[in-house]
Length: 142
Image 1 (cartoon, rainbow, N blue to C red):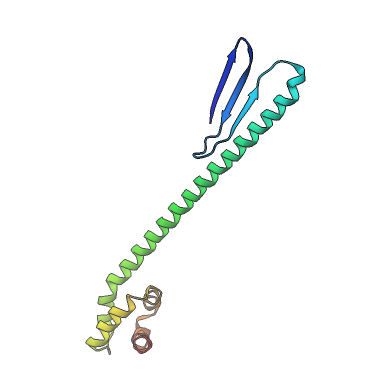
Image 2 (cartoon, rainbow, N blue to C red):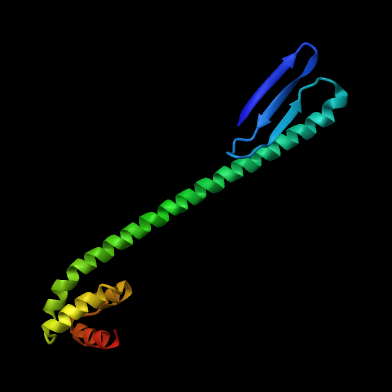
C-alpha cells in the first residue's frame, strides 16, 4: 500500500491511499482538515480506507494460503510418486520369488501391475503366500 500526503498553502492536506493489489484501481482520498464540520467526512474516509486495507489483507492472505496449499499438494504427490517408484522397482524381483508362475505370467504381471498403482499397493500388502493366487486372478481380469 502506498500513502502520499500532499499540501499546498491554498488547499487542505490530503492523504491518498492506493490499493496494493495488482490490476486494482482503488484510491481513497482522505482529507486531513482540522475543521470540526469535516470530522464526519474524515471518519467516513478513514472507515473506507480501513475497509479497503482489510479487504486487501484478506486477499493477500487468501493468495498465500492457496500457494501454500498448492505446494503441500505438490510435495505429497512427489512423495507418493517416490513410494510408487520404489514399489515398481521391487516388483520384478518380487514376482520372480513367487513359485508357480511361468515366465510369461511374470512378464505380463510386471507390465500390467505397474500400470495400476492401486493394485500394486494391494499386491505388496499381501502376505507372500497369497500373491500367487492374486497374480493369477489379476491377470485373468486385466
